[in-house]
Image (cartoon, rainbow, N blue to C red; front, side, top):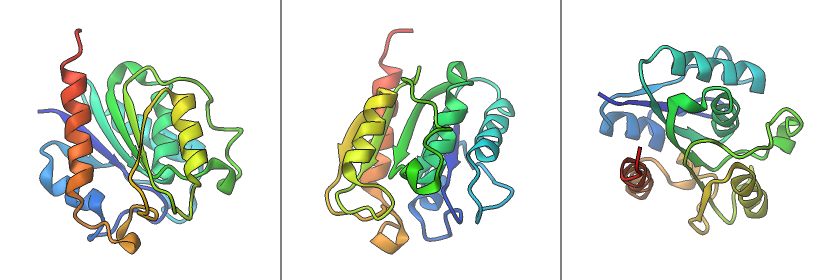
Length: 176
């Protein structure tokens, strides 16, 4: 069975969040837990993602949201060979947390897709697109979708599940 790591952002993803819905829909999905969901620390959160990667045999898929995207990218730069691909939804602007200097500014060694919106209060679309470019990620702007969370109307999110399945299909079709 494949391992899919769900990497939430600040305050975790509650029972109505699309990440929780994904967990119920995707076999092999498990959530990366943080010691303190109220205090995002890039170094500590990335360490938890690395620990989750290390605890599973073989490669993993990552589905991250908000600050979880920053933790996943940071972890991915030192565990790249263990990551099949990453879906990075509504990545938080690292400058809002004073963490841009801590965030590696290099291309990811695995396929990734950044999904963003026009009116996300946590990141302007140009900033999300900038980071997608830095990371070598594909970029998809889904319009006026806020932070792509429950407050923005994203509990069950079939379109997002479709993005993950499409990314997975593309990666599995790549020659080894």
